Image (tube, rainbow, N blue to C red; front, side, top):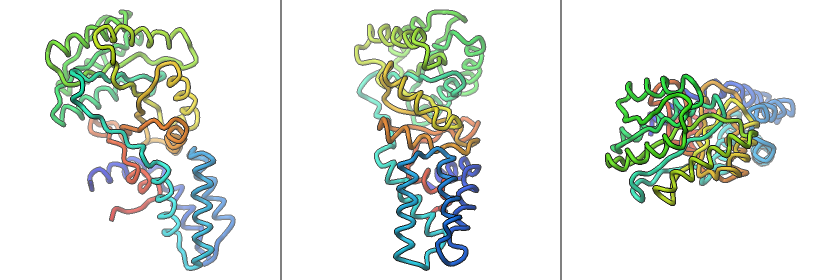
Length: 307
């Protein structure tokens, strides 16, 4: 657990100073400073935590200070972390493997969200947990996608089914499922092409992929996870809405949290859609994709040191 917390703390350290500066100023004069409290509120809004969450945090800090004038900045930080963890109660997604063989995970999202890299990192993570893996390179639209995923597969020693650029992505998904079934693999991960959530024709391609896979298994894909670029802030909420409507989602992966000050958007997505968050991307290395922990996330955001 110590190593996992360190991953969150190190990965989110670019967000933390803004909050820490605000907290340090709140009770510096020994009494509640309206200007410092406004600074804190602004920092939370800037990070895209959303109106409801920001108001809950600020109101609880104000209420606690009214009853205890000796409160300090670190006390306020602990309150903020507690409220945030409470808001995210139930948000931690955990994959149960065994009901299906293979278990089919389909990764979807817009261009540049990090799906290809995430599919490789996800395969590496599950492989290290003892599951046999296969990757399906269903992004046949982007010219460099095949080369990118082949590089990752070779580097991490993961089975890969791919085709040429411009091939039918649904056919690749079908072949990947067939290969995983034939080879007795536990999990097959399908990396789909990035598509604008506003383009209905591209969304229909996802629906075709699902129909083709369901010829093999009527319940597949068993998991449809939206890969969201954490640096997009509140824009990612609209993405999640549209994808969820066109291609029903079962979970989220939030990438690039290590390089953004707007990582609070995942809170808004969860509050609205109640989609579990399975993983967060906290760096460039293969092991920087980490299972989501509401407590570790909240503590790292507010600079709480591990107990």
